[in-house]
Image (cartoon, rainbow, N blue to C red):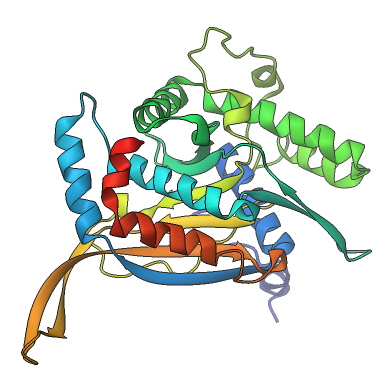
Length: 313
């Protein structure tokens, strides 16, 4: 027996020629959030295709009429906001104690959607739009543009350190001293270290050009548009993990034309082309199963059937 290979196998060490990529800061923060999500949430998923034929036509008309660049992503965020007004318990954070099996649902006053954003480096991290329920459609578009512009101009690692520091303080106050010490140490020593001590001492800009700490914290709800990244793909995402402590995620893909067969008044089979939008709703099963999600779905269907409402937004 080759003892060296035996130990390497036991420790699951990389083999010669393997390329090792250590997590960068954004990956470490995202990995922590997603791991907590899998451990702390009880997610269930509802997927359906919505007929947005009339809604799409109204959106394109409005898009050509307004004096600003209106995106479908922004319109769908406003659709989600209207849905959350009809189903407010989805706009909440869950607090659960595994030891005592006790928990509470904190229904949030404001709707602060967190949306994944792909930075120029290729890394993805959620950024947040604050108080979306208070904004007109134009204001919502301007807010999204603004937070994206400031995120790109920011030293994002510097801001993430502020976020990590805030979470470390929270861990300490909750008595999680060992895990806190471990995470702090791993950030500065070893092959997987992500920064130097002097980097932490840098000060963030206070002139309004950087993204704010509260715009990187967990939103009240997650909003994701996977269709904006790969429009050509035919498949759809069936499940996306919740970002603890959120209890709801609204995701959608690219709208596409599809042909459907139906019987006309003469009983003959005709083919009709419809614009269909794949929608994925993920919710924490502990908030009340599907009952709390149905008002959200009904509101969306109401909007898609009566799309002229978007002109009042």
